[in-house]
Image (cartoon, rainbow, N blue to C red; front, top):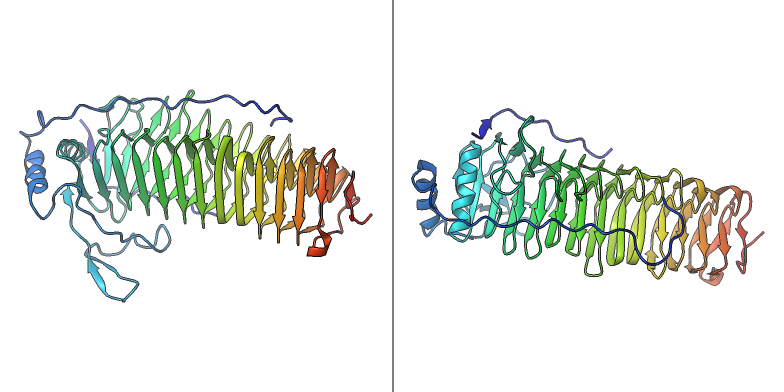
Length: 474
């Protein structure tokens, strides 16, 4: 029997390799298919909660799928947790609007399960969860999930300190799966304790499913075995706003978020302190995979092997704007690995480390394109190898960007291995190489400084450039 728990849980902590390879790829991880639960009202209609929920869903005021309004469109992920649920301020005109009410779900995990089951059967619902409540899940009820698979538009509205948690010491299961046709919205919720041998330690979004998480926290979940995505795995459409994905773990791929062929949007959110064998933070994989990250932080994630922060793989496409990627660590590729296309605008790539391989900061793989505009690449380290700030095999364009204070065995600032590097009004300053090429190493490619635009390469140690780098001072 699932239990209830009224204790308040602590909030998660706030923010504080391999060698050159051939084009054809790493390994691929398949997203585990999850069969949706065939839902009926049999078995729940006789219970008091099902009767109450059924009456509420059937009413005109709270019909399934009724929009909730968005009281979390602005502010930090913790700003609204203590506010009264009676209304939300309209920033445009200063007035307070009533928050449309959903169906109240008492602080009891079994009642939450019953409410979701009935909402699925009746085409969706808005469910208002209890304040200061932990819905403690104790059983695998649905093919590896603690909650019913979401097959309809369902909104779960949390409030102050509302948590959904897998109980310690019970059989492993993830918290929830969003099936094909399902559309799950999480508002002001903490999701924790999920554990699975498949993909998505906390949440799995199958192809054709949608997840929207707002002002929520996905923390301390685990994907074991070959499963990817310690926190979230999504082959569908996933949007995170003002949300934290932290301290999740996988023994395989993508400690924080795994996006195999889906569409992932991360806005004003934090991906922090996640751990994986490969890719600590965010992995977006496949030619149909698109990731967009805006005004967010990817920090302090770690990988035992490759890629600490962000991976774009197998011809994926990414865009990152106004974001900090900092303090991530891996054997190779401390911050970002690009095998596809990426645009980085106003992105700070700082203090990331590749402990035994290439590229403390940005790695641009073969047949790939990276554009860096108004960026900062600073304080990154490749301790025993090449490219402290940047290592590029392919096409790299930098505009109005600073490459400062990075360190490597060779190519402290930039190491170009047969690719084309084009710099416009870019500073390569005070980088350090242990042996040679403090600023730039050009190994068989082309480096165009475009000094007329304001590019400078100065004060690097033991020298500014090695290889054919026209207009680079000695």
